[in-house]
Structures are given as C-alpha cells and as structure tokens.
Image (cartoon, rainbow, N blue to C red; front, side, top):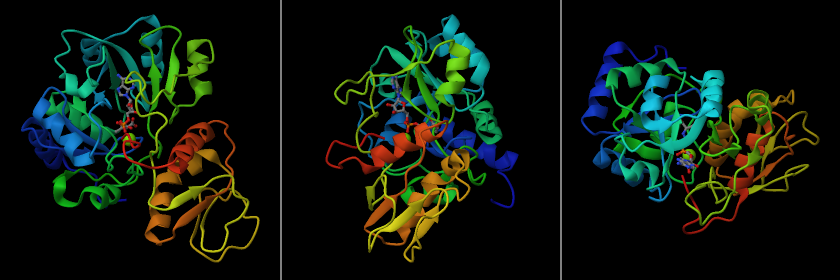
Length: 324
Ligand code: TXA
Ligand code: MG
C-alpha cells in the first residue's frame, strides 16, 4: 500500500491532464485502468498506441453515475435492474449506443453497442467527477499481457510512457469486471469477472449463457485469443511442477517444491486466489522461469473467472492473437 492515497491536488492534476488529452492510469476496484477522455479521439488513439492494442477491440467507457451512463446508451428494464444491483461496482454493461452519445467510433470499434461501467473505487470516482468527462479505459497493461493490480505493475509495463499514475495500492478484486451483453435479450456473459454468474442469475432471474467467443467477430472481441499472458509458458491442471517449472499452487501443496512458487490461497479460497492471481503471474515471471505449472482451481464462484484468465494465459500465442 502507498502511505497516502492520492491527494485532491493530485487528482485535480490528473483530471487536468485527461482534459488536455493525456493518458492517466488510475485504480478501480478490479484492476488499474489506462484512461483517456472518451470524447477525444486523439486521446483515445494514444491508448491504442501505448498498449499496442488492435483497433478493432473496443474500450469500456467509465462514468460516475447512472445519469451519465444513460446519456451514452439505451437501458432497457433488464439493464436498469442489473445497474441498480451492481453499480457502482465491478460490472460492465454492453448496451445499444445512443446516437447522441458523443463518443468517437474508435472507442467502440464502430459497433452499434457501447460498454459502460460505473466503478466504485473512491479514486476512480473522484477522478471521473473532477474530469467531468467519461473516461475510456482498458486494463493498464501492454496488450495481451497480465493485467495490472498495482501501480508498480503499470509502471513496469509502460515506464515513463504514461506520466500520470494514481497509486492507491493493490486493487480490491484483482480480476476485471464481468462484461454482460445487455443489448439484446436474453443477456449473456461476454467475460466472466469479479461478479459471479450466480450473482447475476439472482438478479436476472435466469442463468445467462456465455456469449459467443468468435475471434473474427467484432461483436464479441477479446474473448478467446491469447491474453493475460505472462512471458513464461503456462501448463494447466498440474498436480506438481516438473523440474525447471515454477509452481502456481492453490490449496495445500501436494508435494514439496524447491523452485519459484506462489500459492494463490493455501486455504483454497477462490476469492483470495482472484485477488492474488495477476500479481502472482508477474512475480513468477520475474523469477525468470520458462514455464509455470498451475494446480487445478475449482470453477465455482470466482473460480470461473480465474479459470477463464488462466486458459487464455495458456492459449497459443502468436501474431494477431492478443487482444487487450
Ligand atoms: O475491470 C475492468 O473491466 C477494467 C477496468 C479498467 O475497468 N477494464 C478492462 O478493459 O478490463 P479491457 O479493455 O482490458 O477489456 C474490456 C473488454 C474487452 O474484452 C472488449 O473486447 C470488451 O470488453 N468490450 C468493450 N466494448 C465492447 C462492446 N461494445 N461489445 C462487446 N465487448 C466489448
Ligand atoms: Mg485487458
């Protein structure tokens, strides 16, 4: 944790930088975001350049309240219900984009829909209010790399290419927001995340399906390709590490391990594991290992999102195969 959260003066400075078209990295309760004024196409273009992100992969637009969200997109009764239940918080709703939204096509990759989120983190809220504009922000990592859950992760990916990094310590959830397609009924989950499918089903009244994960289709981008990937290779469902492999453990360790190791949750708690996941992948990478053996993690609750991230981290990597 930093000794002090960002001061009002630091937040005002960051807001001024945003309004001037610069990039600002800021904490949310999920992961750190790399923000730009969502109404300024030149500023948004800087996000794609800094991350090396393909332009067909649209960005989430962050706003401070429901009034601002409704100015950007159409909220049908189901979207309103989800918003009332989970905002502010770690949920992103994809809804029909309003013609009057004033958001450049670059943000939405030219789609008729827009992804909107109201974060609850006090620093994100303060920044949104001080800036007075919606903030387009993907996770603050180089495209395809592990997301950033601390300001140090952001600096390690971008160095001084991103001047302003608001540091509020490690993020609370550790995993990105759950992305829900609420543009058409029935709703579907485009990306599992910090709010579980079970929580969403309770509000929706049914268990939403997983959205289509067609790599070629811009309506569900960034869903299957290699992603969230450390430099080391990932081997899933490992009962132990082979010689030379680092171990990403979960629960009690079955066999003694002498090489680099992080246990996501010795007690076998998926919430604790979610918080630790991205920092653990970055830490094992720093050990210089070539491969990481990952013990099985039950796909219950937040375990669904953890397994989603690990499967993408393990997916074949190659040109055009990384999305955000
Ligand atoms: O927790 C989070 O969601 C973080 C914080 C910073 O808010 N942001 C984040 O953004 O994870 P990013 O860009 O790394 O992931 C956003 C995901 C991508 O998979 C993108 O393809 C999808 O949301 N997305 C954005 N707009 C969309 C749209 N109109 N339709 C379908 N998917 C969309
Ligand atoms: Mg991302």
